[in-house]
Length: 308
Image (cartoon, rainbow, N blue to C red; front, side):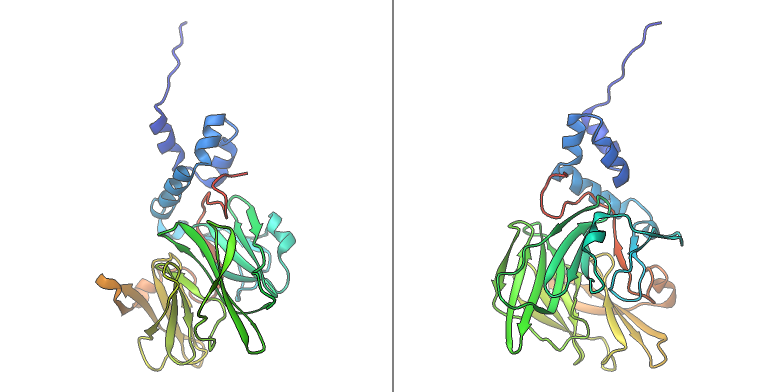
C-alpha cells in the first residue's frame, strides 16, 4: 500500500512547539539540528515566554521553587498547586550555602546572593546557572541589592551597594555586557529589607520612614513613592511583586494578622495610584502569608542567547 509523507509548514511547527513545557522542549532539541537552533533562538525563547505568561491559568503559571518563610533557600522544591515537597536536584546546589539569599526573579531567571558579595543568575527550568564576576572594588559588604529587567536594552540587571565603614560604592551588572559598572548614587540605606522588589522596570525598597524608594533600571535614577496610608510604618509591612507588573504592599497588625493589601497602579504619564484589594481579590494572588520564591518556567538563558 502506498504511503504518503505529510509535512507541516515551518511556522505551524514553531507554533505547536511554543506551547510545550520547557522540559519537553529541552528533550526535543535532539530531534534535529533545525529544532535545536529553533528552540535555542532568541525569538523562539521570547515567544515561548510570552505564551507561558498568558496561556496557562494564573494559578498554574507559577513554580514555587523554595518553600521557606524567609529568603534563605532550604533546598526544598514545590510544584504549585501540589503540596508535595521534594529535594532539589540541580547543579545550583553546589553554590547554595546557609547564608544564600534570594535577591529577585524575572522571566524565569532567579538571582541569588552569597555573602559577602557573590551573585548567581539561575534558570531552574533549564538548570543553567552562572556565577557573576565580582564587582570591581575592594568593598564586600552588601547593604542594598535588587534584580530586574530593562525592557529597552533587553538586559537583566543586578544592582548592589557595597559598603565598608562609611565608604559606599554603587554597582550595576548587565547581562548584555556581562560586566559591572559604577552608579553615582546609592539612595537611602534605612531599609526594611536589603533586597528590593522588581516591578514595571523599577526596583522598589520599603523605607522605614513610610516611603517606597525606586530605582529605574533604564535611566538609573532614584525616585520615591508615598505609602497609601500613614500608619504603614515599621516592621509590619512588606512588598511583594509576582508578575513584575504589579506591586503589593501587605500590612499586618500587632497580632501578625493580615489587615490590608494594597496594589499600586500605573496610570498615563507613569503616575502612581493605590488600590486596596478586597478579600476575594487577595485570593487570586499566591501565598500572602509567606515569602517563597516564585518563578515562571522559561528557556531564558542567564547571559548567552544560546542554550548549552
